[in-house]
Length: 292
Image (cartoon, rainbow, N blue to C red; front, side, top):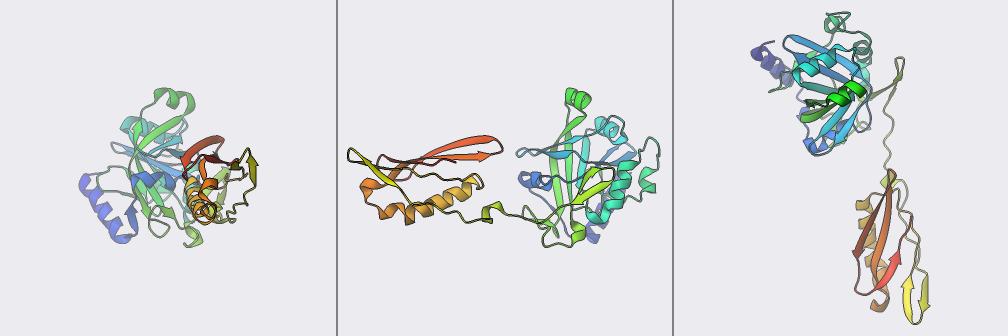
């Protein structure tokens, strides 16, 4: 396909869908973080193909990286190895038949696979790489060659060089599935052509109020100290610090300065890791121990 035709296709796509907007690369990981089934496209010279992949995920924030598992039997994998580029796309429920077809037919068996699957393609400006129309998001990736991973584990890693999304369902770095028509929902393949769509939004930071218990003051040889047990594991560190400032201003400051707390330890559990954060919050050496 000539560059002239490519740009013409791009301009037509932009005219037909003004909702396609670029996504900040630092937020590109959010396009995959909910674990959708993706479409993988690639092109080398005059050969183009698109396949479906269930195992794809974000790998790094900055620079943005992704990974995808591609079996050795697929034509798309061969095109990626030859060209050094690929695109990941987040298809929607309205494309479910296309998603299933592109994942069921090999271009090695059917050279006219894309035509037979009625696959609508276009190109983004500056990238001679086909992408599928009608998706919710697109990530243009440059292959990071890792021969061992590719051969031993079928694992391909890509650096995201550009990302786009349809602003009817993704904008300002956030998905809006809860506001969009259900046909925009992402699909998640389980096995044998059986899929789920993404469910309802749940905000763990708002699922229950963050309540601080009362102090239990004890005295030893005239020294006043406090110990309190809290569970902060469901909360992000940003929420914790906002609540801590509020707690300090409204509760701690009501005590005399001699009883104020100066050192805290916060244990925050997240994905099997424990992070220990220390800081001063007052003026003397009285301590508060927080444990989850």
